[in-house]
Length: 462
Image 1 (spheres, rainbow, N blue to C red):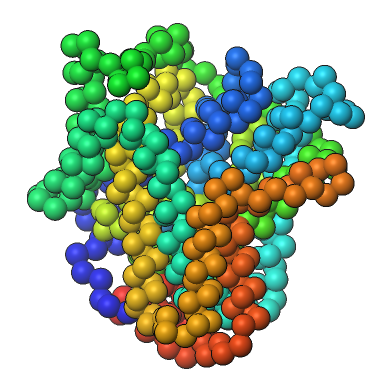
Image 2 (image 1 turned 90 degrees about the vertical axis):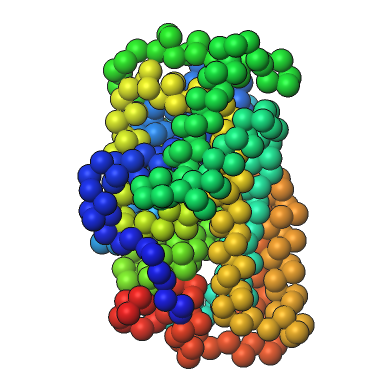
């Protein structure tokens, strides 16, 4: 693959203060999406109080990330945040009103949802075992660049509507956040060049605060900043942990969604590998990263948290900052854990206007899709061949067209597959069925290396 220049693989050369700031940047990148999951889930239950706690969610994201790094031999710079793939499952369980779920309190329904998530996490271990037994080469033969490239593109583009929705709450603030990131990334010097996202958040938040203090509001009339929850929150408090409960209905709702999240995991690992320029599929191995993701998900469910998944937002931070040291991501995990015990600080960060998150997301989500485009180009995928064109076309339409996923019923249980899961399954099946497949995994290590799946034993950078 092309030699990567001006990248930093050991952040210690920057010094401790800069490492701490870089970790903060990763934490901010994941924060909006991570806390959005409990916000949405609580909306499904329609409860005035938090059913799925933001504190627990942050704690689980941090702990899950550290376990993932442990399982992946501390090599993969990935952050694990709340998975959106399971939102359909939460909505289904929230609406269950028959059998044991009749007149059941919302908090107890969440426990049964977590029981299903716990089982879903165990399914990761099953796939990891299959990969370990048959070998990653055989598994990756079903994931050529004509499949993984469009999937990675979909990962970024599928997040695009949320960026626009958040930014549209106040386009002025969103544009300021976006402009600051671009300015610092292009013209920044020294440390400021590698923390453009953090600078974008800080400067735009200060700008929003000034607008708020002089009496400006959002276009819809709402306050730009709302510190009500900040004032009422305590400084120190334990997250409201709770144990899961198990029932076949809730397991059948949640566990099959693991198919979707595991497909997304493979795509994310390919994206991170391609971004960093190291072969994480081979070393530490896809089976290890799956184990880490699965354990993180099951551990989260054991204490009342949502499923975890590798975060594309942080892959965008890697691409933008060019700092690929996993230690920086682990610092972000520690920050998330600490925030889980500081309700007031979590509320302060949670007061960040949605417009700022939207402005930042314009860059981060676009970076992910750009990585997918790069993978297709560098692997010389031939789109003059009808089979390749068909595979990519179906993946893109499925990944972007099924905005609400695909819901089907087994017995009395509704199961929802996300758009990315549908796209991945369709792409893999078409690649296996359609004639004319001339791709042989491992025969072109340079091309494979451009998407992070080079099977050579040495570091791709050498």
